[in-house]
Length: 394
Image 1 (cartoon, rainbow, N blue to C red):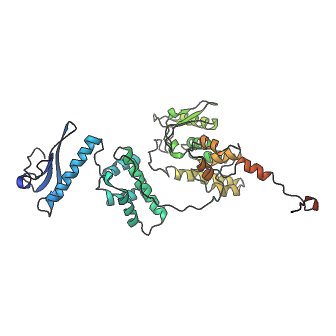
Image 2: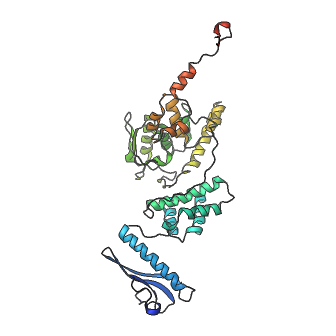
Image 3: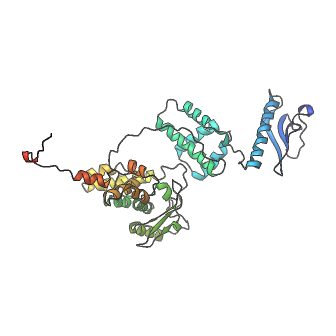
């Protein structure tokens, strides 16, 4: 280390026959792993401290175990191309810089660093994660644990995308009970969606208009660049290069959104390639694991919309819209296509970029298929009781 020689191993023979060996650095009492490992036609020189003092109990045995581990890691990298080990703390530091998580996520990250920060991310197993959550959240509500697990999943997904993991580890995440059935139909009636867009902050109106006419997810839309749009009246197009299911899509863009996006670009003086910007007129930061990126701004626009509806005497619709979330754009898209245009679930799934038709039927459409509606409307009701209307049962 630092150009200083390293003495031989204890007894002069420890480590002999291996590419690497355990030795004591001259002038210190610290054990080091040193040597040159030759594999696959290449040589890797190692000079690494174990952090163990020679006077510690079983220091040599622990250092030898580390030597074996280091040698195995280097062989994996050279032979199988596996990435070098990276501490979870290092991953977290890069994640925070790239994503800029909120206060709740930062609290969760601090707890995860206390538990796993000094361990290589590739060594954290499913069993380790599940044991941690069983202990840490033994008496917590499922919603609380699930939010913490979402932070862990986002961090590991980030590590996977950076090449530190072959795949995001799987574990049995806690299930949050959901109330069956919807209290209201998640749909904006004609004019309501446009009113909500009008009530939004100027920088969000083009985004909300795009979500309203495409039914796209917030996460797949908010980071789109100008090059992903064709803003020609009557021939508008929008391209989604990456969606939740891993597919790319190109879809028509209604003139309502084309006009709003055109006006938005005419007002801008920046050189950012992104189509949508924050209130600070900078691009939105990526959020892995997503959710909540525009929640506060959406609630502000929704509350203004509710107040406008109440002022018009539409109290019933105001109570419905008061429950809206950003994801309602997607629900409303599906319900409008079904109820106003009578499209079947497969066509709606294709229009809204859903990979699963069953998901559209079970989750997004608050209506019955056309043949069921036709049969139900064909039933005869409203007749006065008379013998003429009765049929005998034999």
